[in-house]
Every structure is written in structure tokens, then in C-alpha cells.
Amino acid sequence: MLVSMKDMLQHALRDGYAVGQFNINNLEWVGAVLSTAQQCRSPVILGVSGGTVKHMLGLKCIHDIVVNAMEYLHIDVPVALHLDHGTSREACEAAIAAGFSSIMFDGSHLPFRENLAITRHLVTLAHSKGISVEAELGTIAGSEDGIVNSEVIYADPQECYTLVTETQVDCLAAALGSTHGPV
Image (cartoon, rainbow, N blue to C red; front, side, top):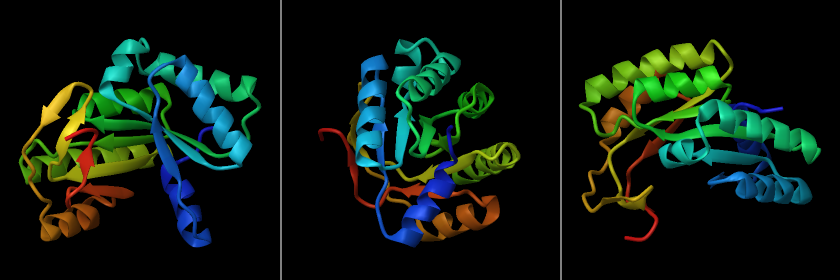
């Protein structure tokens, strides 16, 4: 059974351990990550990027692969299925409809107020279904899904506070100096 990333992370915080997120890219990765999490008795977050959605035939197909793999492999550790860096309201809504247990809305490319408004809408929709929401502020350097970004825009701490308090988002990815992939 898929679980909310929020519940998983709250348990980890309370009990003093970390939870890994591993982006899955194909069926073999799904099996390998799930089997390893089960063997280690560790909760796990399966991240799904926009590129993976294209390669694995869509969000519903990915959801069904993960759920069927969990059943086939007898996975009983907590698993969150997370849309990683959903860059539009529509992509996040589609992940919610497909049965994902967690979404990330990456509105870092938008003006702050627009990011806040879309995040608020997605939080309301997702929370009504028990789904966790992560938001993003600022941009980081590096590459992911073939997109290279050399510009760093650090998140503004006041905007971080405002976004979290006004939207009740579950997690915040604030660009404070980290990178994606090779720089």
C-alpha cells in the first residue's frame, strides 16, 4: 500500500532516521529499489520525473507498475510514490488522479504569487485525498532529465515562510545551495 510522504517523514523525524528518495527510470529500477527497501526494512520514496513519465507510458501506468510490483515482491515497508518536480498544475493534478501518494509542485520558474496560488490549490486538492505536497522556491544549478541549469537563484527566507504558512504545504524544497546531478 502506498503511503503519504508526510506521514513517512513525520515518523522518521520522530524516531531519528532518514528516508531515501530514489528516482525510478524503468521497471528494473522499481524492482531493485523496492527489493532493497524491503531487505533493509526501510521506508522508501519512489520519485518520478517528467522524463520518466514519458518513458514509462504515463502516470497511471507507473502507478500500476509500482502497486503490482509491491504485491508481487510482497513489499510491506512504507512506500510513497512521488511526482518529482511537477512543473505545472495540470501535471500535478494528473498525478493525483493517477493515484500517486505525493506530489511536488515546482513553481520555482513562476512569479512568487503565482507559485503560491497554484501551490495552495494543489494542497487543497491533494490533502482532500490524503496526498502530501512538496513545493519549491528558488532554483539550483545542475542537470536533470537533460535540462542543464547554470543559474542559481537562492530562495528568499521570507517567501519560504509565507509559502509554508499560507498554503500548509507538507514539505518545502528551498534552493539554499544544493545542486542536481553533475554541475
